[in-house]
Image 1: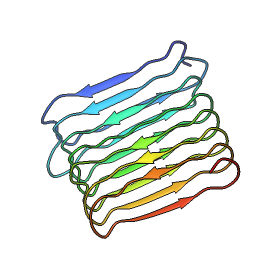
Image 2 (image 1 turned 30 degrees about the horizontal axis):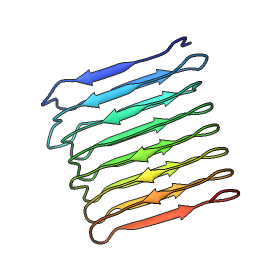
Image 3 (image 1 turned 90 degrees about the horizontal axis):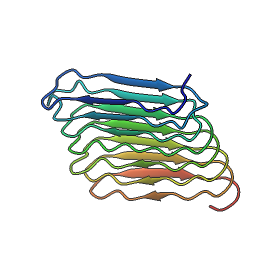
Image 4 (image 1 turned 60 degrees about the horizontal axis):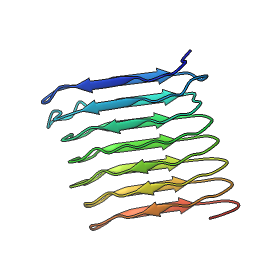
Length: 170
């Protein structure tokens, strides 16, 4: 249950073997934030946000993280999401959204070598923006029906992207 929801997890600089989880349900004005600063150079970071949503939003930022992972799942209503991951290698990021206002973003710069990013959105106002700079990165964006739009910008060598869109705005 979440009324005027909000949840924030911040973990100190130089944290190692981090994990953070936020789980919210609907009937509230949602919001969630995870920040995990200068995480271990040998990995450890994981961050997850699940929202069942109403007015939604979510943010994950993981600064200097290697072998990290971040996930945002949302279900209905106004949606928005973001993942950043700053100076990442072998990072992975996932945003799944289901219905309503959508939006999404995955960023992963300055050196995102060997990273994967996935954005899936389904019916209504989709958008998706993905950045990612570096080498050997892979991006998959799947959108379904309604307003669609996707911006994928990979910058570097041996990168690949796959964008599938179905009906309406494209």
